[in-house]
Image 1 (cartoon, rainbow, N blue to C red):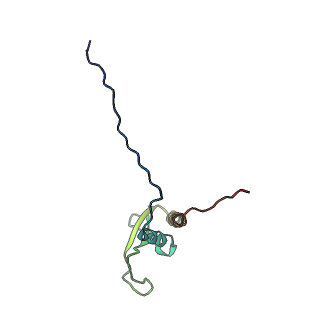
Image 2: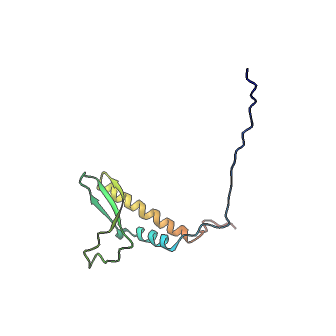
Image 3: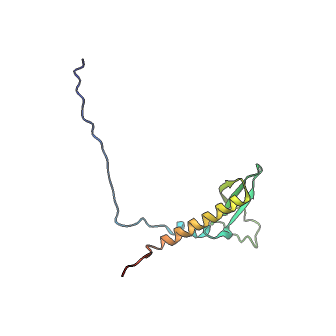
Length: 113
């Protein structure tokens, strides 16, 4: 038999709160607006046969209609089919459009009389 007595355990925890929503930076908002526009996306076929979705780097200042230097693209996802890749782009565009809408603040969805 042991003469050891169990000691109570003490758990440490900390909580925090804030009074308002965290503010979205203008740079983040500009990125969201950029990727919410489908014209800033493209699909490329990789050597392994998969399709990769990419959006144009928003910091690239060249005009793709006039310049040939616009090769700064950011890869996002890979899909097995072209249709799957386009669906991924459509979903991303819709997702960021909603984020922009929510960044404008609360929206009344129902009122009562």
